[in-house]
Amino acid sequence: MPSACIVQSYTKIGLLSERLVVLGSGNGAGNPEVLREIPIADLDRLTIEETVSFTSPALAELLRRGIPISVLGTNGRFLGGFLPAQNDHGQRRLKQYAKTLDPAFALAMAGRIVTAKIYNQRRLIQRLAANRDSDATSALSALERILAQAGRATSIAELRGLEGASTARYFDAWATFLPPDYPFERRSTRPPLNVVNACISYGAVLLYAEAVNFLHAHGLDPALGLLHVTEDGRWSLALDLIEPFRPVLVEALALDLFSHQILNRDLFEKRDLGGVYLASEGKKKFLLQYERRMERQFLSEAVNCRTTLRTELERQATAYKAALDAPEKFEPFLMN
Image 1: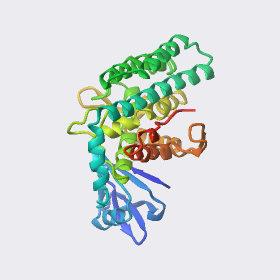
Image 2 (image 1 turned 180 degrees about the vertical axis):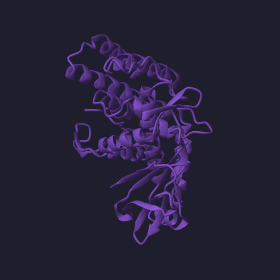
Image 3 (image 1 turned 90 degrees about the vertical axis):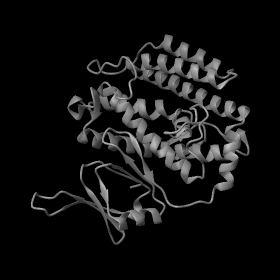
């Protein structure tokens, strides 16, 4: 069990010897019910919702073992997390600050990220069209043209424009593969305005939280973005590095969940002035499928070995770290 995700409201996590004990509200008589025991030795990361509480010994033991904890709001937003108190990366971060301000380095890294994302968008549409005997020639041609332009971009502003154009064209094509009962007109985020957007947003938040933790773990500052401008209130480098994974994980997963009727409208709820969000049971179903996809092994043509999406996400952090000394070492994730 590399990951545990606890989203059931008002549960409590305690420590018993070498195990986390997850307690529920009980039978109404005031007696807490043991919902699950999780051996800490089997755990690599933990995600909880804001209504879940910790005992101090449980929190301290997770931090002592270097296990990151991500906290999500009930609306699915990433609120923050707990990280071990390690501080042996000061010199590396000084170099990261300097390289982030280097226009040539920033353009090169951002260019590779954008071209990888567009490549993966095109590859996903290509595979969907082939598997469903659909004609996506127009979309594929448009994405191919934008991909070629991205490879010649001379500024980050130009890259942002091309990324926006590709994403608009991509979602137009992607939406045609959804079941008719789940129309998707445009991407909406704060709040998500329909069940499809709610599903995409939830997956993106989980991916983002993992990227933040990997960057911290490898001594990088997740706030220092390139494609996403560095600004207070977000981890811009994490947003940069997850871009190539969005088509492969977030949108591909959302499509499968609706196409195979794993998710339906009964598993969502309306909140926040018209916003639509996954309800508790919907989150549980989503998290199960998310974990399966993140841990599923496949043979990567890019790295020529068996790997997982989670391994490749961490590899992005280590490759970016290496690129601070040798820029050619950063190669964003490419879909087979």
